[in-house]
Length: 206
Image 1 (cartoon, rainbow, N blue to C red):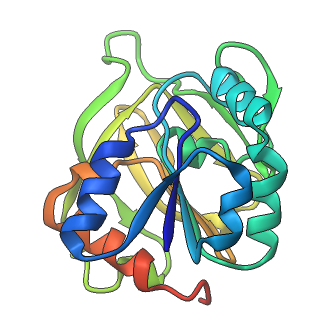
Image 2 (tube, rainbow, N blue to C red):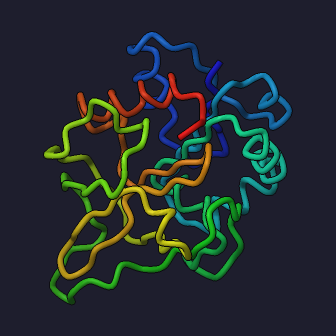
């Protein structure tokens, strides 16, 4: 069973519907105790880092997600969910994240005339092979909605990058069985569905 974390700030329905379309059993999880019954977990998210962290803490998901990651079962963070895998965030004020992949989440430092948030289709550059991207074209665009970006402390944790205006940011991160995507695979058509399908079939090993 694939658990989709409900902490009041996620695009749950789109993720759930995509997994159902792909033929996978999933459940929306609002009780941290139910994570023990999940073989894989997806942490979605839309909104501000500090508010999301506060919600996860208040509902008891912080220790549960850390314990789940330690079990080496696959864990996928999407958009804000990816950002919360980091050590710290700064939206709108500094706070601690899950600390599953060391690094910080900072505002995108684009030009004064460049639109923020970064919304729409953009490409990515895969830096090293990973089971999530098996069978996915390297010439494909995916869908983004964000104003902040994750800066991992260790460059080896960067899975793929994307260029927007004058910056190159991490659009995917990975460490062991924990992965994160800044873009929304559930909104990225066939390529995004293939990525989610790969995650649902992944055993957490690289």
